[in-house]
Image 1 (cartoon, helix red, strand yellow):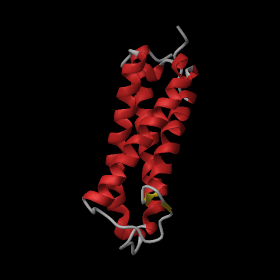
Image 2: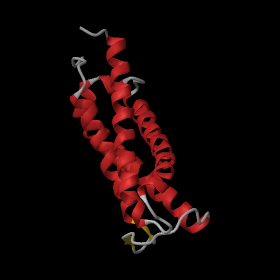
Image 3: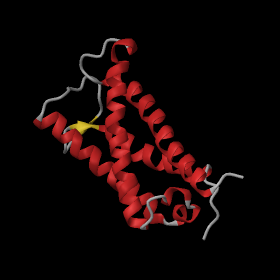
Length: 153
């Protein structure tokens, strides 16, 4: 039987590794929607670097939830997954970060341009990057919850 500290480490690895894999898949799937896309091979490393930024967003979500639950290792406590606030905050922070970054990247820094991207009309930003941070954070929580073995307090 794993010790509590082994369980916490396993939960952290599960959270960030599952998140990294899903973000990398998403980044590569949406790459053709950006101007300049030529091939998977050409854009894989660009998508890999973008996944690093996505993981930074996931780290922010993790820290906000740690503060909210007053537990740095909240992730190993199955009881936190029963709180609707855990799920709502993850989606809200994910959306806030995605919208803010996309607005800056498109309208201020001109970091990239869209080609076939569906656009959110009022904001004039891409839909798929926003969906990414609406879908992957709760999916990451669900995956992590399913691997959580800590008994409820």
